[in-house]
Image 1: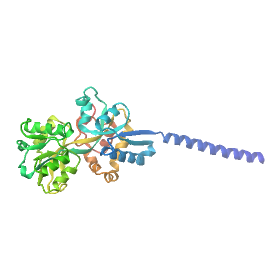
Image 2 (image 1 turned 180 degrees about the horizontal axis):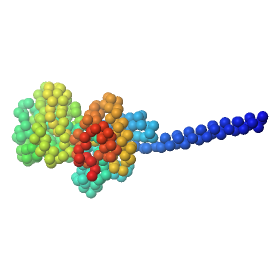
Image 3 (image 1 turned 30 degrees about the vertical axis):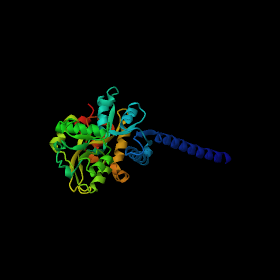
Image 4 (image 1 turned 180 degrees about the vertical axis):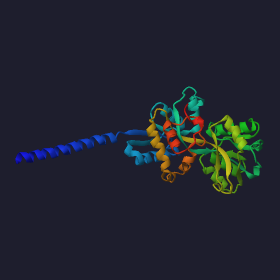
Length: 337
């Protein structure tokens, strides 16, 4: 009897240890870590908080797949592109035009081409806003001639964009108008004091300086871009897209304004795993309600607009797979040959 009881105990313990062993083996397979670092920008800008929102979302929703995500502050688009190229991060946020320059080896990337950079999704536009005073009688881009206009701070992206746009639309030279190089709030103050006729204030909307002058006693309006004007610009600079500044976003501007802008985008490298990028992309769009209330910029991140404003740089295969599943038409220039 004692031997029989002992055998029973041994058998039970054997079954228990076998079950524990199988369970441990299964658990070890399930918890394989996939570390995802998203590089962003300065902590005081938009990129860093958005990156933090994405990382938190991924950890919460697909952490059970082994995803361990974190956001890292950085110097912005150029540094992010270089970090992805060097394998120091898996994802980043960058301006779409700089991503194009990196892909083609142009501009700042002339000696540092990043052919393996890939888009995941467009994020939000930095919108072009040509704000002019009513007293200036500027009603078109050609009317800027003979007036004082703020093209943006010296060496800034806004200065580059303003000069490019005006060169295409009015073939201007430095004698055509008085070009100023002020910050947005300085330009707003100068317009209110009658010292400046207009400015270009590129940025995510609403832009504080534009809100300020629109709410002031100085009557202002926003110049619109016709489809023909947009096409002229797009032919030279394909990273520009068409956007709408909605009516009543700014005090006194009670109609939709058709304008242009450059998208910021979520980017990665072609070497990042396809299944991982598929899951990251899917999680963003399946949780729009959560992220859109976490930061106003993310209100723009909707599936139907995921490819709007992106220049000809390929999408990552994982993103392509998700968009195809969702029936999103992908432009041929965003597909890798």
